[in-house]
Image (cartoon, rainbow, N blue to C red; front, side, top):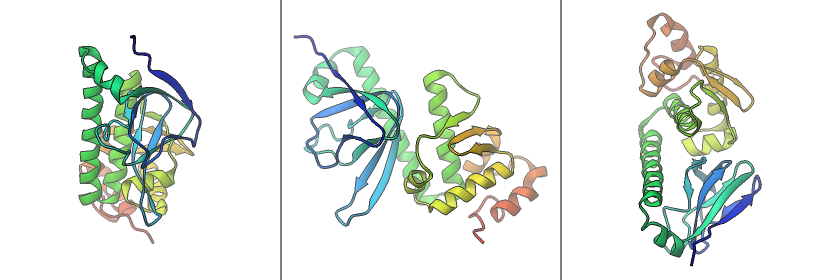
Length: 228
């Protein structure tokens, strides 16, 4: 019998799947974007990741009994619902298997980088990492390398993901703009100086002539931003 995965439309703010529900389906993301959210038994929520077209939602726990996090659409999205049983059959075909394995590799790499960032990097590095990752994902998907991004996620979600406060994220975006790394207007952002942003991520300053301005904006050597 032919396997016919179901296309499902998910509206902004709706769940693709909920934490704790039986993990019977995976959801390749065709259009739109989503966030993964962990809800603790104590009532607090933590954004654990963002997903873009080409990612596979619900993939990590497909061998476990329930979803370890929930997935919520950040904008109107289209997913392809594939049962775990169908997934096992489809994985026997080389092209599909390679697609799934590549998605798993990307997910694992993102999780590794995020874990290192939150555990050991300073606030400017974390935000620079995220912006560079989003730009890289856009270039991978559509070849657009002009650095223009439309952020579907809110600043609150970004702060939750990176382990920062909303105020710190907003202040860093303004300071990145003030030293010419990005331009930002509401959710529309453009990376102007990709090398400079990469230097922030690496905790370096590649442009000595701009060092004084950047040191003043960031409290020296791109360390923790001055919050006063």
